[in-house]
Length: 241
Image 1 (tube, rainbow, N blue to C red):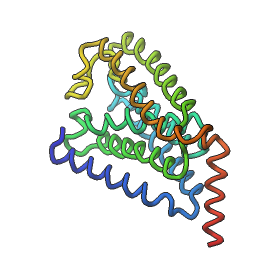
Image 2: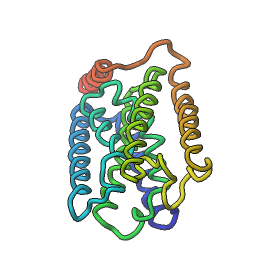
Image 3: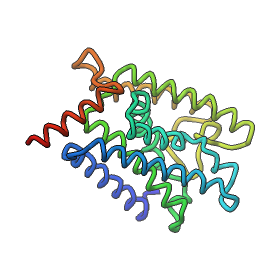
Image 4: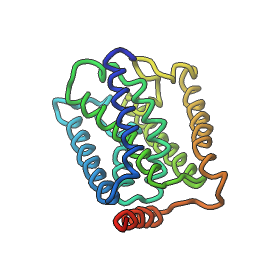
């Protein structure tokens, strides 16, 4: 970790993030761009899931779509395609925190030689980082209701993954033992203590990610219809200009 290859990939993610924040407000047809990006992300996510399930690639430890990032890829695609409130909320909280952990402390195999798995891993994780940035830049603002939605979804996913890990002897979501190669989890104590700490830290961090957007207003800025209406209105205004 944090060798030359890793730093180059992190630099690429940072450049893509900066370009997203700069470019989204300048889009003349944002809804078309968001839908196209959503379909592309969905197709890539399906291809990666199928690729890992092929006989030559399959392993019980890594091929089943039970990591948080496996679900997040599809949820981010839904958020781009139709922007339902629950999907936008999960994209924001999971995409900027849980997904960032995968970028900062990837499995050592994702930093070795170039492979299909490595390409898919970095392309999809960077894409999932860009989705909440794009939605935020275009006017989506989280509320305390969205905090609750994302946290409840994380708890439900944990409740699904932990018994599956116990049954299969796997470690999806790194919920049954720390990940290989080192990560921030190593600082939180042994299992299951670190799982409790992760739940507490997620609550605190996500609350901090919510408060700045809610302290100056009484009601949420968006719902399923508000975001599309805002994007359409901005597009029409630019066309008149």
